[in-house]
Length: 314
Ligand code: DHB
Ligand code: FE
Image (tube, rainbow, N blue to C red; front, side, top):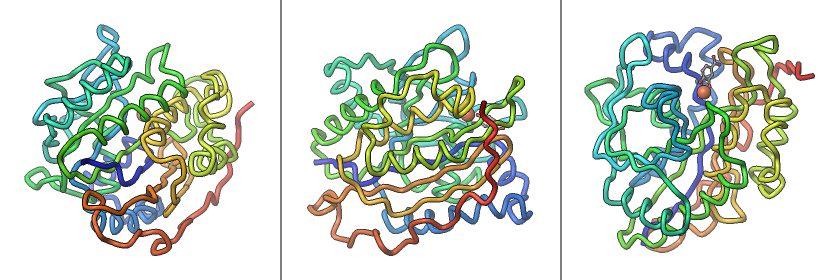
């Protein structure tokens, strides 16, 4: 049986990708950001998932105002990096897992979640930046360490799905994975956020208090988050803060009780508060989950904290 062993939350700021691609990671501004992912990359190398499901949002790269799927699952064998205006990022083509992806599509659709199935799709910074942050820098001719199933969520055009709908989709994905016969160890990513607004009079808004509360509840009491209406994300976390609903899909796919093994938060990267968390399911025993000890306790729970509090909402 396949099993989800852990969830990862990570921001996806495109300038992080540009810093990597243009050799700026040693500059103090970017070093502060990348320093928070060194332990995570160790965790990922040790965890060695067989597959990653990455919940992310497309930023008008694969889709546009002509076509706005609420939830789109990538069932293709590969996903090339999209040209976002200055050529595709110099990262490898992402290999998929069509067999598991099709199984998830069938299970979830029969569970009454109407996914769009994508058999051809390019992927943008929303997916490739968190992949770099967790898997490290991999150049164009290299290989990502595991296949990835992309799940694109519309958080760009109104109306995005509710937090509750996202959490319940996560639940359905958990059920789908657990009904897959092969022994696969799966990690699920929730990406985007945390608080940010990139245009309009409130551009630059960051709300560290809100972000910390979100991370605390994501770890301990996600039911408190599923009821938050869109308008609260907009008011408190900025127009693009709505990306945070994608983290609830990741959380819904995990067990009720999880171990938070790592957290990182820094402000800002570009316009955004960078948040990152690793949550492990406690039931990692059995063949599918591997025989290794849980990583909890090995990593520092909070590597860095918000040194700058720029709470400018309302
Ligand atoms: C920024 C953040 C995003 O999530 C995004 O998709 C685009 C830009 C930013 O901080 O500049
Ligand atoms: Fe974004």
